[in-house]
Length: 256
Image (cartoon, rainbow, N blue to C red; front, top):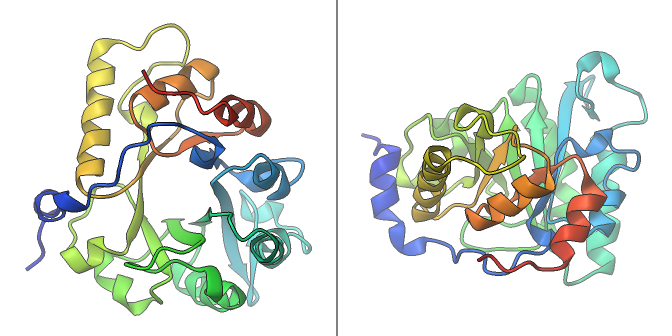
C-alpha cells in the first residue's frame, strides 16, 4: 500500500536540503528557454542553474517548440540542447546544470527517445543517491509514479503534490513545481499580503521538509517578486528576463 505524500514528508524529514543562504545565478531557471533569441547559451553564459525545453516526439526525433505547429526541422533537442550540453560540460569541469524537459505530447514515445538522446551525457547524469553535474527532471506529460521504476535512474520526475507516492517513487522526484497564481494573485508590485505570504511559506517549508527543492511557475516576473521569492526560500526562481535576473543574482543577495 502506498504512503501518501504526507507520510513521506515525515519519513524523509532528516534529508531536508540546506536552505539557500546566498543566492546566485545558479538559483535561476530559464523558463521556455528555447523562445529566447539565443537558446541555451544566453542562460548558460548568465550562469543559470536550470534551463527548460518543451519537446514533441515526431518521426523518431525530439523537436523543441511551444506548440506543435511551431516545429522547425533544425530545432531539435539534440541541436539546441544535447550537443551544447556535451560541449559545455566537457569544457567546464565545475559547472552544474538542470535541464527541465517539458513533454508536450505522447510521454511514452518522448521518454523513449529522450533516454536514447541522453546516452552521450551519461558520464555527467545524476541518479538517486549519486549527485552529478547534470540533472534531468521531466515535467508536463509524464507517467504515474507507479511507472517511474520503468525508466532509467537518470530520469527524474517533477511533482505537483497531487498524487501519492511510495518512498521509492518519491526518491525519483527531482523537483516540486507549483503554480504561483493558484496560491496568490499578487502581481509582483508593491507588497504581498500576509495571508498569501503565509500560504506560500507553508508550501515551501512542506516541500523542503520532504527533502526536495521547489520552484513556482506563473509567478510574477519582476525584480520585487524575485527578491520576495528569495525571502521565502524558493530554490529556483523562474524568468523570461534572463539577463536582468542573472545580473541581480550574480550579486549573491543575502536573504534578510
